[in-house]
Amino acid sequence: MHCTMDEMLAVRDGEGSARAKAHVEQCERCQVEMDLIARRAAALRALPVRRPPRDRWLVVRGQALAERRHARLARFGWGSVAVAAGLALAVGLRGVEFSGRDDRPAALVAEAAAGSAIDDLVAQSQQLEAALRAYGPDGRVMSGRAASLVAELEDRIALVDQGIARVRAVNGSREQLVNLWRDRVLLMEGLVNTHVTRASYVGF
Amino acid sequence: MGVIGVLDDIAIERAKAGHLDALERVYRAYEGMVYALARRVCKTAEDAEDVMQETFLEVCRSIGSFRGEGPGSLTAWVKRVAANKALMRVRREKYREADEFSEDGPNAGRRAPDVALQLDLEVALSRLSDTSRAVVWLHDVEGYTHEDIAEMMDRTVSFSKSQLARAHTRLRGWLGGE
Image (cartoon, rainbow over all chains, first blue to last red; front, side, top):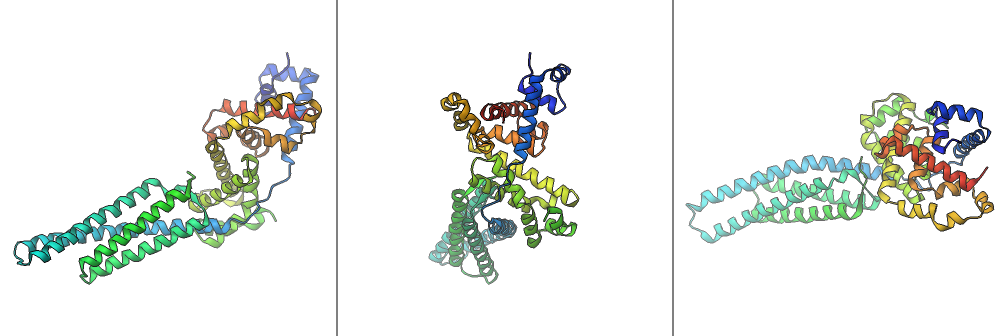
């Protein structure tokens, strides 16, 4: 009985059984098939090398830079979120302290409302950051255009974070903070949407 | 110019440190090799281009943790990354059903012998299922063992061997005595 293709390939790769090896040595037909296998493999190796039709370096470079920026932003962004959340908490507590002795209830109500709005916006921003981390943008690939958009959004978020820090440093109004946090949430939503709709999973 | 002539240890160290000019040199040195492998494993040129992009993005991310020494070792590492990415795409795209049809469909079974003999190797290779084509290329051309392929495909060694035999049987049938 002649060798099967599996047996002949195993013999070629030095893994064949003693029976298969002995048979191939004696069988002219199987030797012809073994020769054909060798010729096929040689022909495969001799196929022309295909060259990439386009240069992808700029896309790769853009994505690599966007990832680096994202990583930096993640570190910086989380720090600022923590600081801002702490600020919002401190401002809120101060409002509570004032509420016991200030005789301007309308202003206090407005302040409390602004503090509550900041808390909500900070929470939304944190949820979006968490959603983006869970989505795992580092394991995905996107077009150069999408990568540019991501980079732009990240830059704008970084500017907003700087704005939040500035307002905090000068004891700016809560209204300013509310506006900045609202901007941040909108930008984060844009960032998450861009990642989710324009990237495909790569994995490692 | 060969890869070894293009990249030296200093360039590799700079690439590992994340210098973009050095990373571009790595890209220039290996883009042909990576695309050639991806193009043979993947079904379409577009897939191969995407695999090339994914491979070099991965190289940019991970070259810092590359522990080998010298261009030869880097070549093997980059090729391995490319093979992994290509196989990942093969698995993800789920071409199998269409491929089974192209391999085993009624036309394939009824083809007249003289027509079958006229199929050249390129066409025959493209007609194999993605999995069989990937295995025969990685084993017979790129030199990966069945153990390597099984690991990269997350399958068994037996699966790799059976896919190789299947590929050779198909090619034998389509190409005849060559």
